[in-house]
Image 1 (cartoon, rainbow, N blue to C red):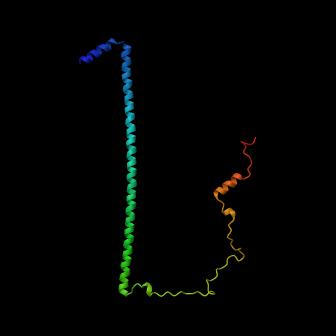
Image 2: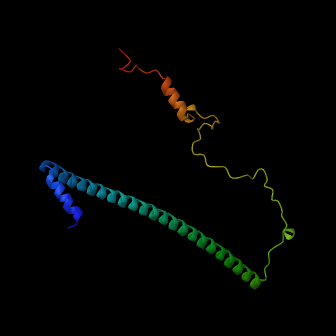
Length: 166
């Protein structure tokens, strides 16, 4: 044993027994408190780490969803463009085979077809011959807004509440 420790043990032996017990108890309690604080700190740090990992994972999931959506959009756009090209190529092939060509706007003759007034569209069958013609006026019950209804309800004559009526 070191000389310092021997001196310390001699000094402790000169102290009264109740002081020695008090310091031993204090050492034990401080050790327990330090262990509890250490465990609490470990638990808090573990929770913070897991929460951080959850946030990172959520952000990665959102990024992957966005990338998947963007790739789907690009694929759909390419499919549409490919279908347009195929249609154009097929149309050109049919035009070459049949020796057809697109008409120019100057070559097309537009003849307006006038419909005689007596030959209009056929009359619609009448389901209710005694029905009144529709009016442009709509009843106010059908044009009432929520604020109108609340104002009507608030201003309506209501019996007084039991709390205010004595």
